[in-house]
Amino acid sequence: MLGLKLPTDPRWVNIVEKNIEEILTDHAYCEQKAASTAISLIVGFPEYTELVKEMIGLVEEEMSHFKMVHDLILERGWILGRDRKDAYVIALLKFFPKGGSRTTQLVHRLLYAALIEARSCERFRLLSEELEDKKLAKFYRKLMISEATHYTMFLNFARQYGERNEVDKKWQQLLDYEAEIMKNLSKSESIHG
Image 1 (cartoon, rainbow, N blue to C red):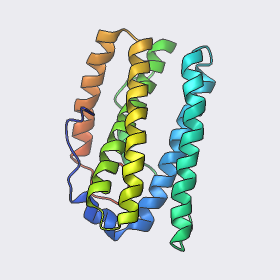
Image 2 (cartoon, rainbow, N blue to C red):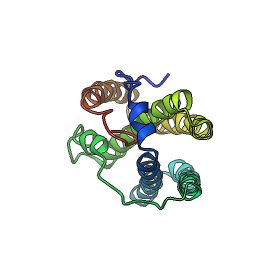
Image 3 (cartoon, one colour):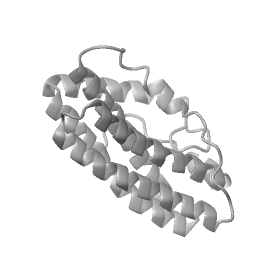
């Protein structure tokens, strides 16, 4: 369904299990960054009314997810740690060249967002199936479903605003590129890395 070319190494869950506090902090910031992405799409492309409406709802949803993760952190007696750079996203952003028309820039941003949501969905599925902590496993199952809807929403908007065949071609190229990135990741206690 997600089209990812390289699945996450299941041993990544072992890293997560040994570093739950770190993964929850990283996850909290991923949710905050997703809300920020939605806000930046509203600010950057206000003339796309349908997109703006969806992004408003997404901001609310992502911030509610941030709160849910933050609550889990507090329940465990921890505090939200500091944000750290996301090697996955940094590498992903190198795929598309800078510049181009506003529409091209929008389509590229939508494709990035779709892929990040797809990888998050895949990771959350793995956590929901493999974590020994059943409360966390159930939590990630719920979020997995949400991430899947976000992935399809972003991809559908890219196809709506761009030329369909070109968007689908770029999407496949991006999936190939992302698979190469993933070969060097899955070794840290972060959602994408």
